[in-house]
Image (cartoon, rainbow, N blue to C red; front, side, top):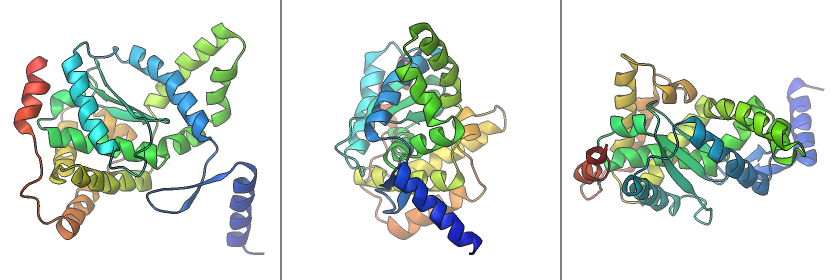
Length: 265
């Protein structure tokens, strides 16, 4: 019996006992230990904790509405247009963006201040939407934290213990790390979402350049949790050149972003 055969049998057994899901982007089976309902529960439970830990919501409804509008335009053309997404701008100076299972996506004030156009915002949000749609967030939570631990905070009868457990897990969720395969999938599918929503895909490349240049003078939280291999800009650029060559009418939104976001800070 070969090692490869044993691995296959083990994976099939896990799928039998826990369940397999189909990645809607790749069409491939993936081991998934959380149900859709559990994902929604986790997102709903931990979203308020994350808001509290990272300075709360930015108290400017114009900015919140703008971020939500851009995010929803991308969510509608994703592989899960039926899913309910929640986009929130947080009043924290770290340069970060991240996603919870169940469609909860956050972007920090520090990240918003680094960007200079709507298309760059779309690049960040599109990337995070893919993490939710492809269930990367759920998969990495299961691996790095343990789904039993996550769910224990939801089902604990001891309210005080549940609150403490949830608070302690929040920072682990914020620091969740993705694999390079997850990142590549989020980058490339995010490009497709951007174009489908009418945005110039070069906005994704611009974001990566901004973050990498900023990393030279200040650690970037987004890059610590989202691995940035040397070839990332290359494969983004190659896909744009091969698949998207008529970009003349696609939206950039530099002026809109300045008026809606930067002028309000």
